[in-house]
Length: 611
Image (cartoon, rainbow, N blue to C red):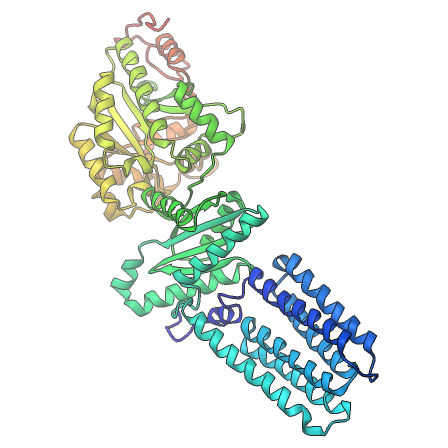
């Protein structure tokens, strides 16, 4: 890892294309120089006396300069940065042609002043190295063309010297002004420079109607790097991240260190979905975990409003477990609009997959997991995971979670009424965003009171990464829920970030082993050793374990031999509506997926109260 003194080439790139070197500013400035030079050239060519040189050729050169200036003003913002080097070089050539062929010598010397335009333009937008190249080319042309008019060899020294002097002064002043917009550590734009660029981009988007996206990125747990490794290590991380990301961006995409460990990214002519894809590429390019909020500009919005909305997305990414990207959009996708309407109408299905006991006596249902099912007309192929993501991104997750929990508690109460001899548990998934809300535990308590479902028969499932988010509010909610009797299950165990030491301290009661581990159980290979470790770990920590994704009898037998007591999966039953589940349990006397004649075992079938 590099130290503070090693800034890579990021600072050089920013100095090369300073806060002024945006496509719009470069096009307007260079275009204005060209137009001014062309108009002045045509004017003086028309009124100057004399029969020397070639007046029509000078007029043509001036007219070409005028056309090039207009082309820059019209199409310049869409041109690459390198195109401006061609324009500046051509300007030097046109000035030299005009000086050489002007109708009289006095006017020729006057036209040599146009070399100053070249110097100013290059000094504002180009690096010292490239500025030096353009100045050297202009000086050589000036020292050659002025004496070619029959003047002494030294006659070109004054105009060429003035050109160099003005170029250097403008370069120094431009860089001093740009320093106010540059972050000293990373060489990227600072907050002031970014806000300036944002206002310019908004103005341009308002004129052209093109899209504009904004991304705020924050490095996760950066304070721990400073605390444990020192600020030099933290500075090196910031430099490395800035260097890596800058190399992946195009010249019109502006990256800034917005403050502390926060970065801002301005993406002209970019949609929200394209911004999300680019953000994911940037996050994948660095080893440091980071969270990001993405949004887009809408006509009439200010820069501060745009930043505030992206900051909300960043906050939600942090609250949802960090190391992720969250879209905070000002306009909803058709899928989000349809989902909002479905929530308002209650037109969402909740189905149930049994959780069963493992053993020789048969798979007996001891609980059910509530699973959201909904078919979208706008996006029929959307998965449940995609649906949850949309709900989180468009601030629908609170209403969706409440609808599912209320529906599930009501259906579970009917199940319990039908099968009074069973103590069925109800497992319901909870979003990390909801878990991080201060009032979440009280909202759950209210739903339980309204539905009459016992708290000690409710299991809330949260993914391991969300439990490991170290959100004080989320952890406090888990403790409060457990105090009220609700049990907590760590879903998809083994795929998140929790260490064994944290697992021992997390407020949890159940582990749900991710189905990827169960899928690795095959008859042609030994059982994965990690499954045995998980079984032993659960006993040591006094945690129940549920194996997810059981699809074959062989997998069930292996899990039973390893000591697993509970399972769920297609081998036993797919998810189904509550009415069908009641019928199925009645027909099989409480057994799920049983192929042999069911034994009553105290089972008393009853009529379906829902019919």
